[in-house]
Image (cartoon, rainbow, N blue to C red; front, side, top):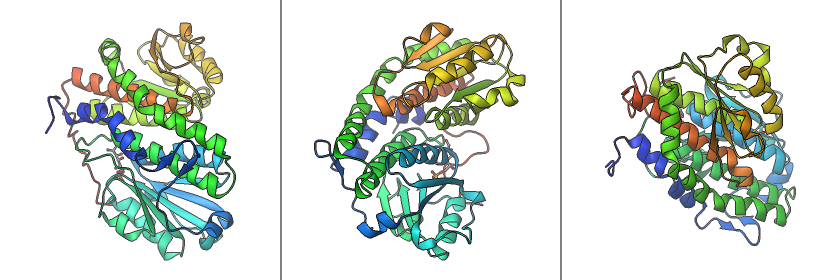
Length: 362
Ligand code: M6R
């Protein structure tokens, strides 16, 4: 049941601190800097690994982009991220040295399943990162890691994004330790930041009324743009997807630096730009892009942990300092923003038009 919430989506947004704790539970030794995910992969395999290919759709694809940054940085492995419906296993790749990771909340998405089967057919090792025990992909992949979000009813994925990123961060630490690219001290730092994530998300949830006011102020805009760099880029894409999905407004996410290569032509006084400026997002560089949109008259909303940069913005949604995980916290603001814009317009938030929770057609 909705437990007093008007929509499942808002309930699920509020369940994120718990969902993240569940994903971490029993898997982490913060002091030793180790992670246990119960995988059946051999030590030699980690060392011979040449490439990780991530396959996913929608929000899970954005979690995959996030994970790619992490894996490249901490596990020192080449990572490519594929929209599942576009995926092919190329003949020039060595299947024995390629790990294909399917990221899928439902474990049933037809596009992702087809991609997983292509990888399997080519002889690659496969791993499913999913929420759903007993799902087709959990059964078909060589290994499965559960994100442990609990059931998500709202068509818009919310808590499962936080759980996916948390679990993929654990996977990164695990790989980094197995491949000796991450020291136990560095691993401990990341694990500490992960354990601080639920509290930081709770702080944002406690500030919901500020987001609601901001959403109400801008609800009638012509379009909404979201910008970010590095870890802020998948979050910008995810923020835009959430808004378009449930409010039916035009929303786009861009890599901040790309604005000037075309999208800037869309920016007017009536297109607010939400910019992500946190740890891991090259915030000072994005600041230049914020100034570009402001000089075209666009309202700039900062989702920011960088207090020295905040005076630039018309509105600031403050992200608490939790290091590496700050972009995930920023994403909670974007979920609430989308929710309150849609709620202001009285949309069918839990079941948006034309969409299904699990997309089982190709
Ligand atoms: O179950 P999956 O994670 O495989 O689903 C993938 C997408 O269909 C899903 O994330 C979709 O984009 C959501 N409705 C986004 O909110």
